[in-house]
Length: 223
Image (cartoon, rainbow, N blue to C red; front, side):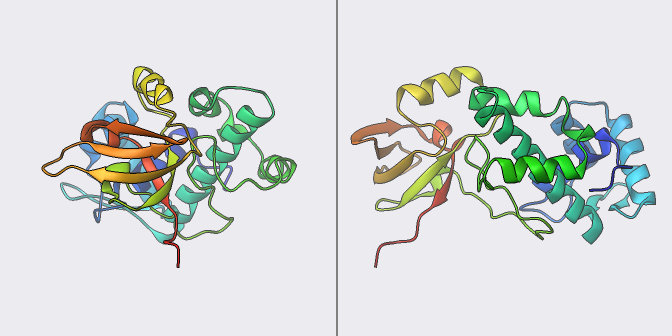
């Protein structure tokens, strides 16, 4: 990873990658909101990244990652998820605390240390939230649909973003919906009605608004 890339640039690259998963570019206003900074700050950051060939920016149109910027964004997401796993597995932090804490020092981590942490953790496949850790030099990260996108009969493994509201995390916990938990969809009521899913041997009901904030890795159908 390029050590010359600043913390604000890495965070912006990660945000642009996430915002452009289902659209061609990211608007600077949306990027500023995602990062929690002023639009003028984003404009300056984007300008610096454009000068370095990490993004393409057309005023009034939006920001798009170049190939180099995309690789840097994915490498930054990989580092963040490895550090989260270190905090959870080695230091005992709760999975929903790891996201906040990882940002405190991940940007100053030498690549050699990141590589050694990954090996020491036995090359984990996911972060504590259940999202995949991309391979080195990966060109993309597999998309994970929301739980509500599933249909009856589907089986999947749960992932919960670190940015999820703590009260919602507590509610999901009462239902047994934690990262890494396997669920099966039993019923899906029409017109954005609730899901009925099997969790830990029990049927649970979840509304559409909450189910759209939980993500999943769908397991292949049994043959």
